[in-house]
Image (cartoon, rainbow, N blue to C red):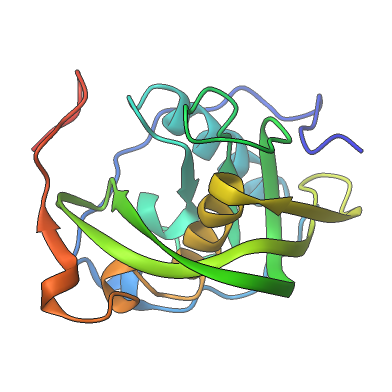
Length: 182
């Protein structure tokens, strides 16, 4: 199954909002995957992710839209083991998970901090593809699993800062990629 739609329109690059923007702490509503505005939003998320150095995922709340939509692509990341390429889903949820492990996370909406977050290393995610509304089921692990959980959390109004074990697990970012702000 492919998780990219050939029918996505051309995406626009949007501004990424930063914490404490209210939209980042709101659970987004479920959406109609065939709504043309949602299909355009998904294309915009992909376009914005593609021009953002180091970005492997972006959720609708990060561009100021409260909605259950996101994209992920870890295929170029050195920590990736399993990869499905570009994944664009709406109304996604984790249906199975196992093997929790702590790992460092960063986020474009929290550009100056990173945090140690415990997440499942093996997951199964179900969601809908924009435009067709077809149900997609993804079984993955390692870094791709972490990225999917991070974006699903955004759609639920959670940041990685909500998942850290305490202040000792939050770190000042030491490395910025070219083009990143901060």
